[in-house]
Length: 392
Image 1 (cartoon, rainbow, N blue to C red):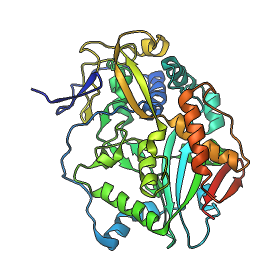
Image 2: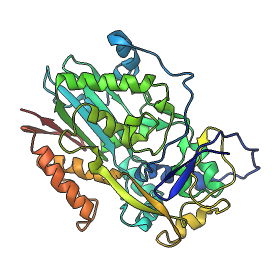
Image 3: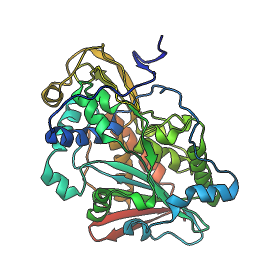
Image 4: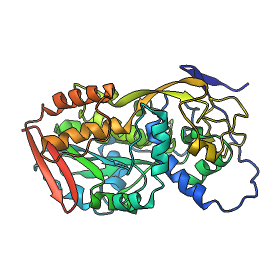
């Protein structure tokens, strides 16, 4: 009998998976393009469900100051820092945590499920993608400690073909809510060219927050624990909202967690960016095949398959409610960072509607939070903008 963990009306079955027999298939260029748009939305639909236990085999090792330095070397050296981040006017002898959010050329308003569907379709617009420099959203986190150590990393997944296979098999948005055992933290020399273009073209939010010298070292120690934890959270790319549980995460939740370890969100907490959403069988399916290395998100009835065209063109506000999920909404993260830009005299166009009650709460909380910094430095580099929040 398979163990299952129920969360707020739906279940996630954790089971060993085996590679299915491969199907004969034609080339699907449009579907592959669609999958990239779907994956961009994975971070926006984060579901709190415990994934399957992982083996400790292959976990990194390291301990003590020397061990931490060796573990973090790929994120602190080996390639130049992107110019916008390297050029931040960070005061010498002080420490900073840095949040980097690459913003996609569409808005997924989580209040309305069809807004998410329309955003997925807008993500296929090549003109918008070219202007933005990227099709996919992403989040990264950096640190510049008082001793000069300067690092940057983010969570990513290596095998996009698995999501494509699950979409073909009828899983619908469950394909991007599943756990993929191909996650990793990217090094400085592995930054995607699309992310670098976005940093140059301004489709990005970069905000540096001054923290204490000891807080910065705590960030580094937390990252070292993450890399060496026996549950191997690094390889587990999932939409679990709290990386502190060491059971996996996505790019936004990882970045917010590590920045929080440095005290960036003291007084407001990371749950400021969480939103509860309703999940329906109009966009959550249950396919038949499970690729090796995937713990599928099982919520709909077995055999309830959703084709790609139905997923793109159907009405996501209809269908049976399967449960509710609470997780990080990247648009709320963008909203909070945009308040820092506004305080620096660099206002950005508002992405969420003004009647969004949760967005209003984030607005008010962000104003109080950012008001605790004593000095703000706006940064301009070509088309790109950034902000540095100093304590004094």
